[in-house]
Image (cartoon, rainbow over all chains, first blue to last red; front, side, top):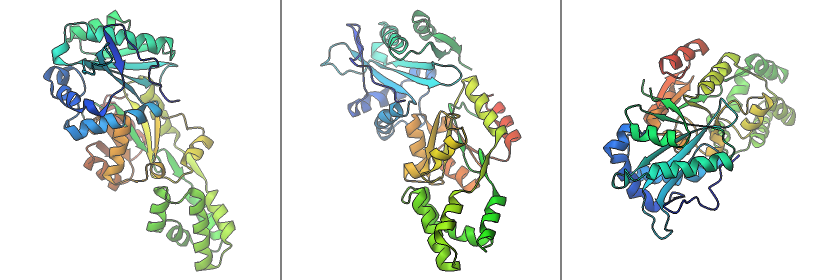
Length: 161
Length: 204
């Protein structure tokens, strides 16, 4: 069963979650080049514009085949398409409704609770609308900011190997 | 071995084993050797057309019947039907590994088969259509292994970087194609070795 996009789009008045667009290629390349994002998340070895475009272009296909749902975190103001960060989820077997969540926040927008807000919106929607009951995040214990985001939103923590 | 998010398994020769005895008996039933039948059914251009979806499974079988009839005077329709009814078995040991990897939740498991348009029906008939997180069929992709482009479509669709994908196939050429697309890849040489490979990779 395909994974839907949140409709209406999710917003808490400060941030909103929206679909990826080809206009976001430079922001994605910049995120993949960020040392902090490289340290804590899985970035590709090849991270040029063409690679970012391919990843964005296949986003609809991933939703259609229920492989992943990835969204951009932007300011709540519809006219501002700035990429503050990303939240994504991957459904997993091993339980009736289990999914792994992941996120990153662009360097210029950290320490403003962007991830906590976005993951909060996303997790609530996944629980309420898509009936996911077991949401977890794989986080490194040396990354207290992400441990906080997970705990604040009731995600089960899985320690990164 | 670096961290792996998705295990991608080949189907034929790994998960599914065609019944070679049934193939031989079918050929003999029409007065052919198994080599005769294989030469017709798996003639490279015809096979490529079936594996990339240019021909549907039904059209492929009809063409096999037509060619066998032209070359050996057999009943074309009867041979086409017999070829479509060839049997196979599912490898229970490999399927148990698939189940165990998915149960740990450390990686997802995909199936990637060079197959005709009937693969999905076959998987359903064997009751294994939901054994994998996702199934990739070359006939739907329009490009087959070992073309690195086929592996890149798989990686793009998964949204997983190729270097975090482990591909396992019994054919060395396909292992090579996957590596050229940037995936980690190993040749399948049996369920026991697959299990120990995945244990070393931290997936079990």
